[in-house]
Image (cartoon, rainbow, N blue to C red; front, side):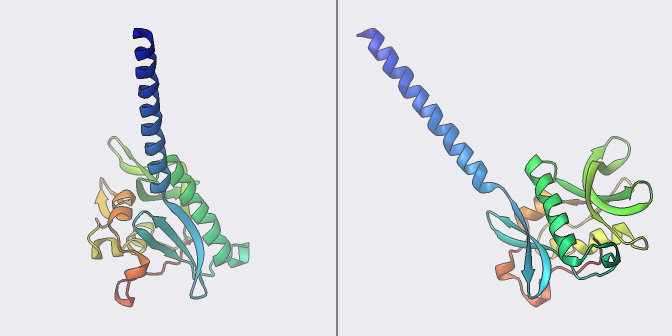
Length: 190
């Protein structure tokens, strides 16, 4: 009799733990951000679907890289896939600027480096910019609506500009309630 009670208690405990882990796993799956390249009014646009709704990130209009085969649509698809990859790995917490191959200005996944502020992570490329672009200005323009909707703006940190991506995703207005006055600016980067 005592053994049956113990077995029943163990079964109930196991079922309870299984239920808790299944619920937590389901919640984590629902909370995952999904980055997509969509056609928004005829223009390729990178958006992110969050638990709060859809946020517009980048409107791809520049033809600067078209001669090298990078149309706005292709760039949208490639960069959107990069955002998704870094989001899935949990490393898309900060976005900053840097140089790729020590010569190409870029926007990349940032990490805090002691004594250097935020730097690009190895293989953290998000967007390659035009050679004459100022990466810090493009980063500020790209996420300028963060400050308008109560999020934290791009800030200078130990000489580098950094954008708190997680905070932006939690605070920015969704596309459904955006108006023409507060839509994100268009950038010319890749």
